[in-house]
Image (cartoon, rainbow, N blue to C red):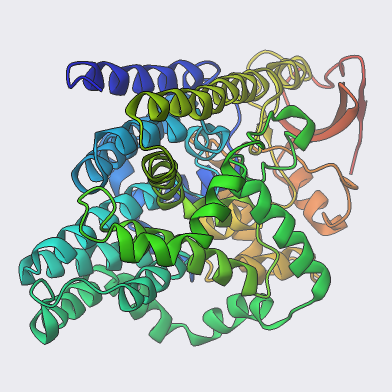
Length: 522
């Protein structure tokens, strides 16, 4: 492929990613993961750790970007799209350097067209945006070290790995898979840094992850509480994860339940075949093409993806799309590399190889274009990742009187409440809100949320019993604070989405509820 065309194709991939990511970016409502990182800004405090598995690096980065509240959903989400652009460019740079221009172009387009990129970046579901960038930075540093053997590069690799573990603990699964793959496919002896490299990387890793392990050492009870779900295992959960992982290899990760599988066109035709073929061909790939620049690191990368997939399956935990999204971008890089490995080894004639490339890649990209556009359209019109449609927001505003400020709460939002209150764990606050009485700490947390004029804590209510756990004393406290609340249910296609809406009581008395909404008094 001509060198002059490559920059244009990269630019088109970035433009497409923005074109499908920008529409509807300003719609009202924040999901739970977004609220996590805004709570410290609301209180004007520094939060190094938000939970035992989630660090506050994103909150620290938000400080110069957002400034003081009030802010808007667009200002909160736009930086995540910028991170997406950075991640795509870093993926291209990494693939271009170690796997060649063809692989780099295919990898960046596979990422730009993947519905999971929009889903996990626009609303940072997971949260996934910053860990994605740290993963590709880690791959770039690690592959550079494997190529050069420099101790300084090993130190940078360790530092990035530490930042990744601090940002989100499931980075450690990817890290462990990469280290194990490196042991299976080590760099050549003359490039291995040996003990000196480890002596540089280990302290750098401890520095990068310092906020995390210092918190873990200081709060062992919290760590045990969060580790409890990982201690069980069942064949049913394992079978479900097998299906989810297959969907991942098909190019469309398990998407949040609000969207529903029927809304996503998955790329189910070619990627699984290519990936499984790469598994079978690993020994031949290692022996035959070890010296080729474009494939020298492909065995290591493929092994990393396979080992990480096995680890995700082995974990006795109900994983969702955010956990499987940790396979990106290594998975996309491996797929792109394996595609061209097959084409290069299967066809001796150059014209036949080009024709085969068109037959394989063009349908793949066309289905990706359809999938990403339809996903963007559904996210924009229906809402996703904890957000509701503008129609629901209009109904919420209509339920109040002029001057009233609506706050919509998901009654499962113990995590943002915990972050706002400074409690150690969401579970602790959950039980305080559901216990026999509302203790002072929980009351203070609730008051801080409801009384803050700067609060932007808005989230959907899941499709379950809306009053399943808000106990009577919580409702009484809401009434004491001068808020009126109602349950609003709206038919959206075939789903009935309940919404819990609270309003300040205006000086003129009762509000008139809109059609389809029912008033409820505590």
